[in-house]
Length: 274
Image 1 (cartoon, rainbow, N blue to C red):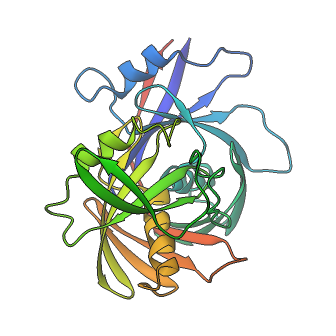
Image 2: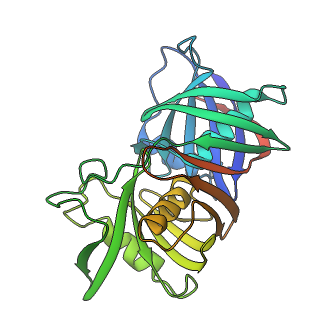
């Protein structure tokens, strides 16, 4: 069986999009890892599988797999790319998409720019899969001989956010990896390292569980902006500067959804044989 795929990225966060045939078994983790290999495969941070058949009340239904082959709940830049992909240059202004973490509204702003609602952020420990903790604005962990303070939030997937003086010198690989083996995060966690420049501008690097450091992370950008606002350090609208580009995040506070905006890019199309 041959399938056509599309390679896309949002601020350097890259994806392989496939429409998956109904009745076909999902790809095994080993096969996803082979596709994700940047030397021997297509190379990507996440695989996005679009259902061939879906509920007629939505425009698309999708599932997300990290480069290590494990399925995850949400991907902000991924859903922005899905919206751009299925609109395919049409004059549609909005779409409704079904994800593992719930419905997502997407707005097509033109010129490849897409804005998506990631829902209302959740701070409870069970939402972040944070074990044996009471909800708090800040948590502390002893990791590798250092005391690490972080905020935690779910945007459909779990995030820990650490404030740093400079993202250039932040121990992203060391601490990001160390967080994955902490008993308080049995399902792993995405770890963001945030440098606040102004009340409406931050720099950010993100270590994604199952991937490693990526050029950008949409839900990671949203998580940093939300945690920074909760700490009283950021305004409602924030420009997030990542290694791969800039994303916009808007959150008007409790009771409101988080909106993530930025450009999407089609890189190329190809075919693979199952």
